[in-house]
Length: 388
Image 1 (tube, rainbow, N blue to C red):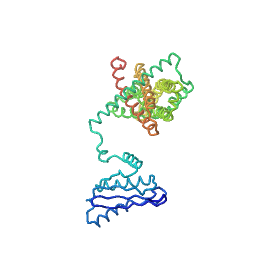
Image 2: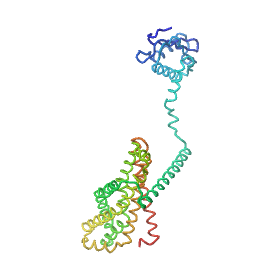
Image 3: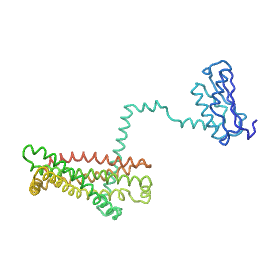
Image 4: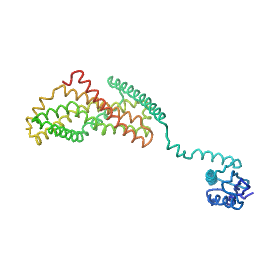
């Protein structure tokens, strides 16, 4: 029997197609553990001495009667021995190992990486379709639940029973309204210039450059002003909503609100919905003005139309029905941006990476639904005669 302080040793004894690995001594991390390369060399040496090929080895067993003490150093060594035997097509018999060591080896084998070939193959086409359909059903249920809770929060707001901080509402209104003026100004003015330049190129062929004012004014007021404002707010404000609420989800602040009996839908989502529904139409009116001025700049500089004639033509082309269309569209787009940002924030996972994914998803969701809503509203306005 080895003494408790004996150094760790590993020796190989071969008998025909069978190999026995003798383990003795104290196998702990503070000791100098035998190398796996020495084990492989011992097998090769015993094979060459017996005149048999290495491939003829069939089984390996262990002998641990002289093993005095061990920790994870022995587990690592035995796991390496098993891997070497697997490569050489040698069966390992761990029955002679201590019971605790066998359990640790089983857990280590379960934690090994999956087969690369199986990973590369991935799920089949039908499996992907099934997973996508399951995700769609789950997402639809979550969206319906979100809008149901939102409707209840709006009802409480109308009744004066909603629980939210009014000071936070004014801060959100400022962040989503006044703070967005610079980017809305730049984008709207440049888009108005682009529309004016393209229209001037085409209408100049017919000597009708004055109608650039009609083209830019109607396109901006009916659709482009609201669409530009909605997309800008989706990338700026909607992403901020998702990141802020997602971070609160990670920090378990939303769970704390529920614990105190405060509905997160009223406390977090409702002020953001109200702020964007109120500010998006106002920003759209501002965007309409800047877009018309951008077209006027091109019309006067490139087209040679006087500023007075351009503005008079714009006023004659635009009616109240066109302005109403733009404001209705802007209200819908603002609700979409707020709902998308808050929804993705509430669906955020519990990691920093999940916050980034929620932010990206919020922007994509908002832009896609804004474009869909624009198409649907255009058809509805034409059907009810509001576009005339």
